[in-house]
Length: 385
Ligand SMILES: Cc1cc2nc3c(=O)[nH]c(=O)nc-3n(C[C@H](O)[C@H](O)[C@H](O)COP(=O)(O)O)c2cc1C
Ligand code: SF4
Ligand code: SF4
Image 1 (cartoon, rainbow, N blue to C red):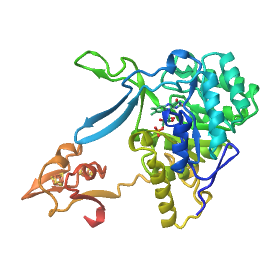
Image 2 (image 1 turned 30 degrees about the horizontal axis):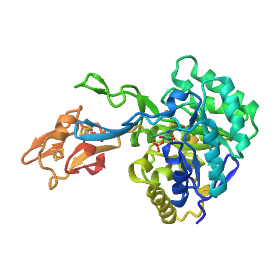
Image 3 (image 1 turned 180 degrees about the horizontal axis):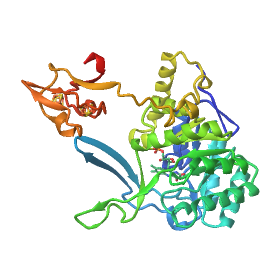
Image 4 (image 1 turned 135 degrees about the vertical axis):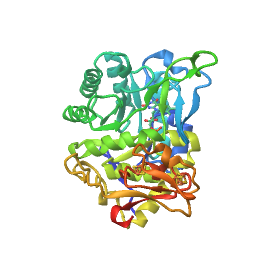
């Protein structure tokens, strides 16, 4: 089975890139990524803004949120920049290039035009195969300082494109009015790849102390819940783009990686999962990708890359809107808890003898099926009821 991929002209042995973060901050960590099978690493971002190079303690939180019986998690963090000065940063990268066999891609985040020029040139002189432009960091990047985000990103990309010849990757923020048109403009400018997307910036409040949690400010937030948004934009954008696309957001298992490839991504940048599980998460992802492909008898990614993107996704005019299905309760599994009645805004479920049943008011929305605690409800064609 061939897991190899091409990304901004680089040949990668598989689609897993360790995303820019402390996970790839120094040679020791990059080595761990390589040992566990990562095909490439993006080094923790170097920030021109000095104050960001020291991260506060503590800087990680896992926020659990409840809505009814459901829970979600946010991985909330304020790990800002690489702690290194520019010379140390590129020195560490030089060591990594000499020691490791996987491609090492630096990431820079600047606040001045001169900074973008200076540090992209330093990257090029270090001999790296490509450079990621972090124009989207949730803590203090150009995207979060007001002004016209789109215009600023394009101007940075232009400055760096004119300054260096190596392949350039722009890491986009989620907050754009049109990620596809931004990607298209970058492509026309000669940018070689995009990362969709960086994390969001968020806030949580400690009601006891009446102040923001942790370090007292905003923080990066992401988690498994970001996955579907990213997938949607990759599926929408990939058929219209020739540049490389790295998916980034919410990967929790190998099937998520596979879904990104179905949507048209070339590679996948993974971060939070590795923080939460350890570098062995990379072995797990690779194993799960292989077993999916084996099950489907795929031997390489070109057999399904982009299969669920563009026109394969139905538009408003094409969606089948007939009222084909209704909910039906299995009386053996129903415990008469009443949840389905409480949540049905069409007032279809009602008690009858010892169980609940669903009447003709059922609109077929399917919500009760998802919320019944005993999985007693199924959707069935109307004629089977
Ligand atoms: C702790 C932490 C540190 C990060 N640091 C950086 C960074 O320095 N530069 C950057 O471009 N992205 C950074 N990111 C964003 C990740 O590279 C990645 O794009 C994002 O977390 C989405 O992927 P995930 O859902 O797999 O975590 C960081 C994310 C986390 C969680
Ligand atoms: S939610 Fe499920 S178990 Fe509860 S009354 Fe409805 S069908 Fe029965
Ligand atoms: S499928 Fe929707 S409309 Fe039908 S009973 Fe369940 S919640 Fe009500």
